[in-house]
Image (cartoon, rainbow, N blue to C red; front, side, top):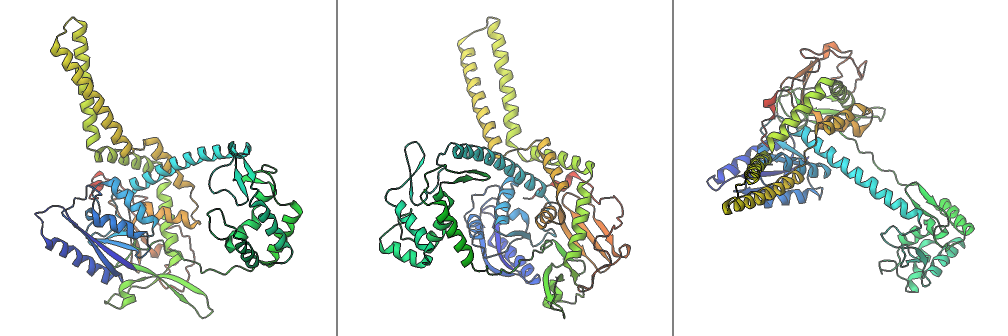
Length: 513
């Protein structure tokens, strides 16, 4: 696992030793957990309340190069203190396949703020989907009216002043000739070379490529067919190629098509950076091995045991079994209406608590509007002086400025209401626990850390101070030997204490992000 370290201190009166200490502890953590540190990003005298930090931005940019898997920080407050910035940049890192891990806090992705981060992601997804529907509706109307939808114009066509596609008198003959040559037995490479010898250029003004020929021969626009999504309209544009010639070309392409190369399947280990050895406290990482019958077995193994760096004797556990156990427990938790309402209450409270500027502006606006109302009452009673008029103009200007500030705050930091949060949370109940993406979403959103022992499993959830303990002697098999399957892969296990091990305490949300 490849990692980078991000270190930061806030003000000039802090010393360089602060950075050295952060890097030292992060480096020790990386060595203990089998991570290779590629480089360090260091911001000196920059507050985490802002994202305007040079090395921080360089790190976010470099994550897109897919060179590292983990960002190590001494504590999560080194990454960001503003929850909205944290949610935004964690989302970017997540899309680039990178996780943020604290070296001194025993949490996976940070218990604080994960639920709000997920809500904001859902909020953005909601508006993205809504916008997409509107765009698709407009583009579908264009197709129905035989109008050009934008983008690159297909080779052999031009767009007229009324946005209709017409055959290009210069290049359309080359399109028809291409189909005829391929139908006669010429290869795509031979056709490409022929067109280039005629100095024919593609729509970008470059020489014709093999891909251009392949795309051309499969493009149904050349028989006059226009389509968008599920909408298909025949004879929507002028045809360049006859239907029978097009059909013969498609048959020959299918005949000459080679079997696609097999790609190696990528196995996702959903509990990576969340599953800890209960004895030594180090990560349990994904491993695989091939048995006597050439069957691949996948399991989690303690990093200390793997690297032989300590005296830990923790046994490996089969991947599918342990992930099923965690997923089913999490799914049970979100089935509770009481838990859903608790989360809604806490997220709403957190949004109000986080934004210190907005309540202040709203309070000032109320005071200003009250002062304006009092002055208007005085004017109605006949009290009108130069100072009264000047004061009224001053208050009205102040009112306008406050309204603009409030609008800007709400735009910069969207606040999903309770109904939207409930709508988002209830969607988790519809997730299919057999779908890999749904399983991943459940674990990433709700599971904080999992501590595995030989006789039990301890799960800590985000936003809970109580731990859930699953004793393996209550199950029909513990699967502690990675190559031995348990008797029941979906056990109904017993829990102790609260039925979901999930007590919501407000002080859990003392954010350090």
